[in-house]
Length: 114
Length: 114
Image 1 (tube, one colour):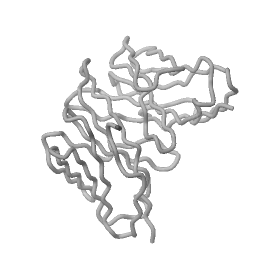
Image 2: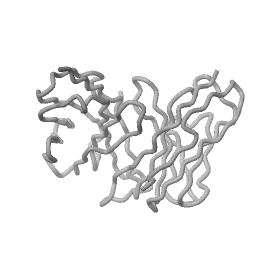
Image 3: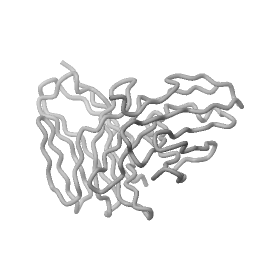
């Protein structure tokens, strides 16, 4: 069972470069999420997709864009990376239903912007 | 203030019980969760409790919920060195679109020493 798969696992970018973080889930979940984790800050929601074809902003969306490519895949794009975007990025998915609220997480992408 | 608050560090001796506390602000929280994050890994759901419950027990884990005080705790009995990790408290409630998106605290680092 792959669960939630994120690529790449590590990335170093120069300020101003762009990149796309990929996420795929094989659990047929309706909803997918992107969080960032910074030391002492917990996880903060960047964007989410409640269902295929929809995306919405979370708590910290500035500097990011997302695409829900299909039910399985949800990508996060940094158009012009900044040092403040150095973080660990987690993708998650869930069925997002009252009777099934558990979110499953990927292993994370560790991004450094220099 | 933050939606979910928890202390940042807890140190216990191996074999003792650990109690990690969390407070939340949203009285409409439907689910409350405890996630565990080991070094370099993603988040793993330990347990969750529905808001109409007071207690949930699962092997060495006991979750207590005090809705009046909006206080959640996780007790780990017979704490082992393998329990050393960051523990995240999270809550979710259906937002305007009916999505149960977890909101996380900053995490409590549990250190278990011999």
